[in-house]
Image 1 (cartoon, rainbow, N blue to C red):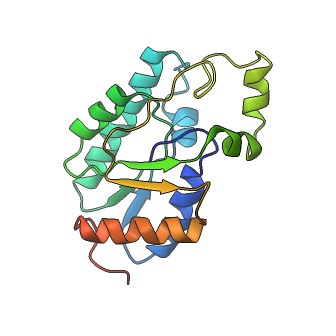
Image 2 (tube, helix red, strand yellow):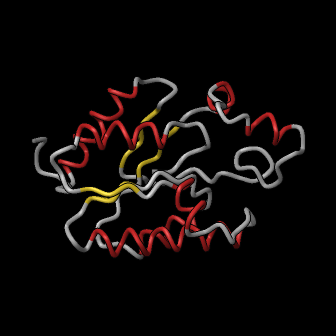
Length: 168
């Protein structure tokens, strides 16, 4: 899942995991991976690319064992997402879309305010670009639909793509 900070990627991931409780799955949350495997990286374009490559490599390895891997990360660059796609046999790009006003309103961590005050550099959507996906397999608009509705939309698409068969 890709989208701006505050778009709802992690919220959707955990709600989706709850709905898919009978399916073998793993979550590689962007914040957790940064805290444990990529703490040596900053937020330059190069470091963001390296972070996504690490996450995608792990996701690809895990998914080879018939485990669904949910990866909520900002992944702001198309090039990084293309790299991630190349490292997995069954990659589905889910664009978690929400407008900038909505994500600023949801800013539970206060990151947008800090970035606007100049306390955070290279902040995606403000001082660093977010390149919207050109052809994602799934788009959910969390500024227009409920989490429950978005989860059901994702589940139906995953069934359509034969990623999952049915809900247990």
